[in-house]
Amino acid sequence: MAAQREALPDGRYGRSAEERANRKLKIIGGTLGVALLGFVAWAGVHYVTKSDVSGQLVRFKTVSPTSVQAVLEIRKEKGDTGVCTVRSLGEDGAEVARKDVTVDRRETHFTELVTLRTTARARTTQLEGCRTAGSQ
Image 1 (cartoon, one colour):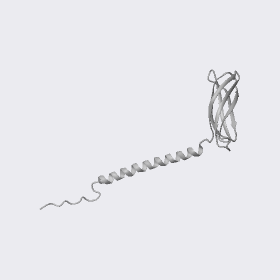
Image 2 (cartoon, helix red, strand yellow):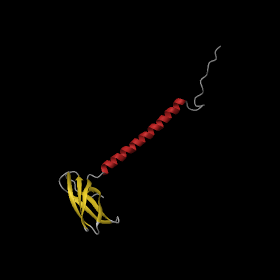
Image 3 (cartoon, one colour):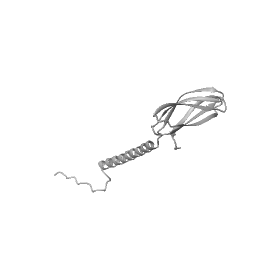
Image 4 (cartoon, one colour):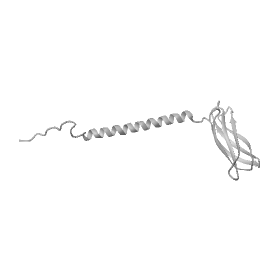
């Protein structure tokens, strides 16, 4: 006579392999879902708070020991007013000039010539950044 195998009592010997695999998948799925939600939130905040005015320093020229000219390339929306900060550094690396330039042309892409008065001879000139007027 063949012996019949009896079923194991429920809950007595822990979870089955299938139940453990399902639990791991739920944990991994939940973790990936939270990470995706965090990325979407970060991207949304970045999109809302980004500057609508951008600039690039095309070139600069030291005109005299007390003056520098810089050419900026600006991109912005037609109705926006922007502020770009330009600075010059002296031979020793110290800041010798700083100027906030207001750009309010009705164009979306243009170049702007900026003259900075320096306290000493400038070695280099940098565009620190541009922002929409009124924002910090």
